[in-house]
Image (cartoon, rainbow, N blue to C red):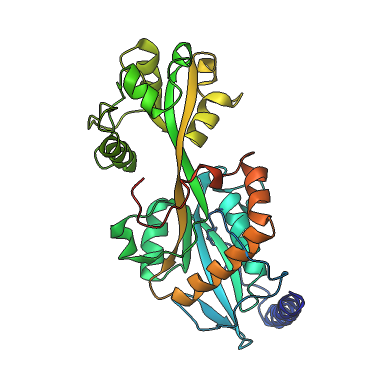
Length: 330
């Protein structure tokens, strides 16, 4: 840790000297590299750790993807992309800084890896995926779920960073009869249609396969606004809408939520947590391995749990099915 701070200090002193020299001979020039807003992107997700007592992890300094070796000091600069408005996972805060749970986790990982220096850039979903695949970014984080198609394009680490908690929105008046997906299936199973390409469609489909006697009506539908889904449930057109927990919290439970007026009429029933992952460029296996080692240390020393409580108020890992392995049906 101290060595990393020392190197950072030396780089800052060197950079200041270079700026002073340039300023002497370029008094009429504008800054050719003015801030472009491309701060590297990081998505805050869970990381776990082992009992290594805070020791630095991994000495592998192999350059990967778009990373660069800074000033020949053996420190590899890593660009981390994250989306900009996915609170509380990853976002740009009021000070213009990369923030969120996943960003905070990756910053904690960086502190344990003196051979790397992480930089964060906020960007769009599409640019993140294309950028990590092409090597423009080394890492991307945006609440990504594992799929076999993505595994062909990216390196997934062993350890997920967080989870996306899903469940169903029901009428509050039915809360005494609907307490989980099984009781919802017995009540009616009437679910707002889901786009067939939506990952939530697959989750309900997998539920039906494992509950042949308690089926949910799974209908493929077109995309629609969340306001429509809430209204359809309130009207009785359907009896439930599958929704991500943070979406319901932001839209309905928050005092400034767009649909806060529905708070007394709608209730949320949690189903399970879907693990979310940082994506590494396909040539960045060494970096992913270093992330996994840091993850284990951060889990062991309680950092991951602390960050989850700070950004969510509850543990994300508690909702992931026990014994989950990458590739498992959820």
